[in-house]
Length: 394
Image (cartoon, rainbow, N blue to C red; front, top):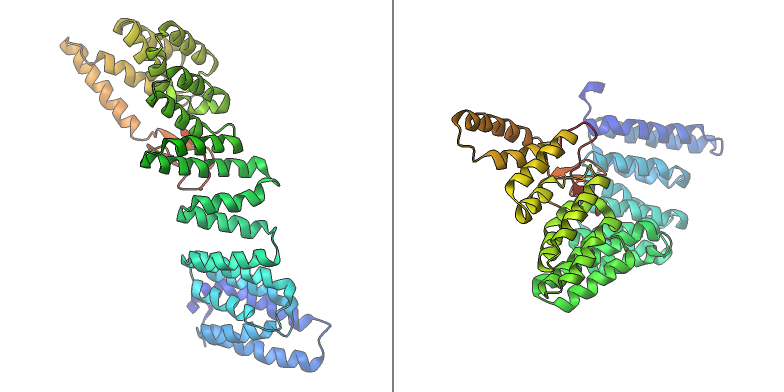
């Protein structure tokens, strides 16, 4: 006799679903006695196969039993999800293929089965098969958001940005606030590809298309600003970069070097210093101290930069500020001061090991590389320069 503890994990997880199927059919008042007796015999036969780890035989019986009463199909969907979640993709595929192959499958369940089978293929990494199934769903239901979203995920995975755009546009009118930023990023991906080929016209076209779908897309603005800077049009680049604060101020730290260069080329030093002072007074939480200090040192002197850093550290202590100060003090010639600086530098280096330059605002993923799509939660534009919470060093 098989002990419960001897059952494989997947079988233990599946037992509640199988039990639910049995209870549903056995308790149904619609069934006559002979039907119940027939089902009971087949059901326990299948359960016996399951307990003896004869999965294929058990699945064959349970898939056939659903044809007795299609209203119980949800229990098969649940069983398929359990297999899929536990990595038994082949078993999930067998369940759903068995259902879709039934000539008697009611039309109202066809799309649901196709979707579940599509999820199975996605789990197995068979994107071409999954794509075909989701497209078949759209034949029967052209407005199926689930099928469209899954096709978009496939095209993202395959980096087929043209297909991703074409598919996402079917959802744009219904939900522009959510879909617009996605399409915007797809155009930015195309712009990056064009940039790699040196096709300036396509970079500009795709970046402008990106802003058409999402006017707050910082990535597109940076692409256009870079084009302007490369063409020597620093006034235009400055105008674009100054707009980033209205688009998403969290991204200001990554465009500061460009903005400084534009002001420098336009000989607008005082305007730049005034802008940085105003910016920090309004957005104290942004990590701008390093950029600001470099500007002060460049256009005034090192002592003025040190004074600025010390003032900022008193107002808002931070690792970034400490690091900048240590860079300035690294040239101390006094032995005692130099030894103290080395000790502080070592301590700060240790503290930096637990910090990251960027963090996803959706899932918390941290990285020292800026990803426009979070590698963890796959949200677009959610990875931004790290900003410490109040009272926490950045």
